Image 1: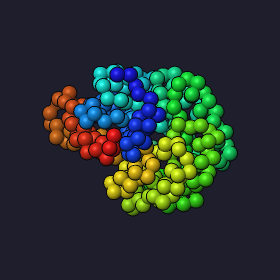
Image 2: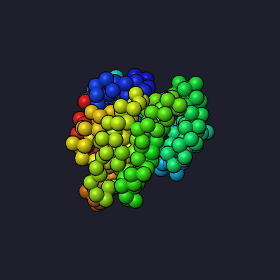
Image 3: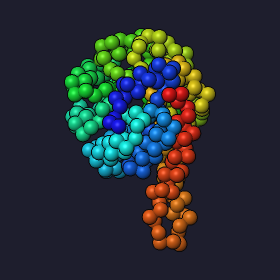
Image 4: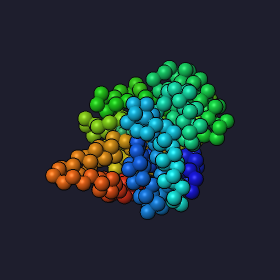
Length: 281
Ligand code: 13P
């Protein structure tokens, strides 16, 4: 099946009062595991590429990644979206769309609101003309290692969210409600009251970043209170690298490394089977 539009997957999630899950991947093994488990569980899912990984050559590059994922997605029936994660470079965003990404994130979250609105709107106009969806960020989801999840002045304000979504016409908006990227120093506590107010203030689907390490009970509530896209990166990557390490230790005195991809995929798939159950899609 061809890629499904991310906006359509988010509509399905909204209708089911739950969230779709989006996994950061940067190679065939990570993406293939997501596609195969999604097909097995019949759950729509989103594959994301963090562009810094491709710029730093930790992956096959934007065009190569889009082609790799397209081939995987063409083999299955379940709806799967392809999304470019955090990007603030207008030309790189257009390039990704031309390479086959049907959804992009423009991240202007560190800019003053007026500037964020102006530059997000510029991306929305260009991306929509090419048939692609746009996610933006309002407030700022920082890094767990810097205790950014405690910086309430960076949290999303409901009334500003309403204006932001109206004026930019984005397809989804990432909100800052107490999550942060990376490994949390302490268990995060989502500001669910704020989430409820943001959800009341706008019809735009809401996105939760920094998904690794948030307790399931908080996630379940967040999904019921308006989160329709949930991003997971760190814990999936950690498992990926741990599985490679485990294989190398187990096979230290054997010359054969050909079984590595399947060994790693088995580990990744066991994790994904559990994680994907969080979504009621
Ligand atoms: P984590 O790496 O903290 O899971 O966050 C992923 C994310 O939000 C990608 O945009």
